[in-house]
Length: 364
Image (tube, rainbow, N blue to C red; front, side, top):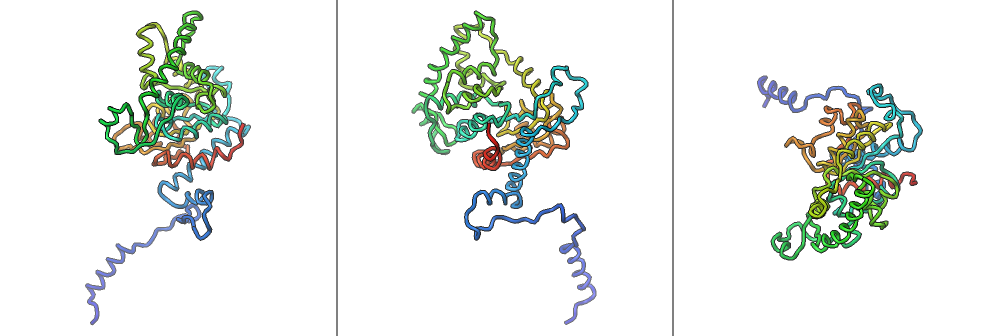
């Protein structure tokens, strides 16, 4: 039986819709999708190198590796700085210039987890220049020198844990006794700091307080020991939002005139960004750690490169979930920056990222 003209016309219409020809595009700028072939055996380095052509977040990982390695190369090179669009308006002392500067930010859960040891590696080997974190990101590092955190489960009963004096962070457990040890350790330090404030009119800031704690802990397992030793400034604008804040509150009952000046730290981090030859951002998570770096970068005319690892989405309008395209609209990231956000759990991705970048770089 032969098809009628109407049926032939329907077929042509269907083909035109379903099998619409591909418009010409530049194949030379596009790579074929391809993953790792396990017939070649198990080669973890080769697997990571294929991520860029796998697609989805694996491709973002591969692009992030390129961006971090670019930041590393800046710091190893003697390249002259790009002209700063706002240079004519800056104070002469600011224009003196230093070098490409990597701002490294992370939320406290990164220190609660085993990513703490990777963060310590970066600070120990001076792979980053400025650190920004939260109060928990400070105290949990110091507490881990005094006592361990433990693995638990996401589905443990909260009421039972409370009765047992156990605190849960995801599937991690922190005994209340750890906080008692921390209080016993930190309160005498606050007393000495207060005495120095009174005797020498020394006004503390969160960054100088953290530097002092890094000196006092005097333990190579600590992130902040290495930040102190390597003179890496650590900023924590939300210093009161954690156990340290609780301890400062308790201390203030006895010494109400103890001062920790956050404004001077804001000025300090903003000046670091203004003086930087180039600005690189590496950020785990969101919140205040992310925004404090982004806001400082605005003072430096925007970041040249940015890599963010986070599970946060943009659809609630939060800064934590905001994309890097949104950051470009504020001037916090340069318009021509090849900024990359990886939507993933940083406990999975960050160790792999460091393995492909800083761990291979020349160490001091």
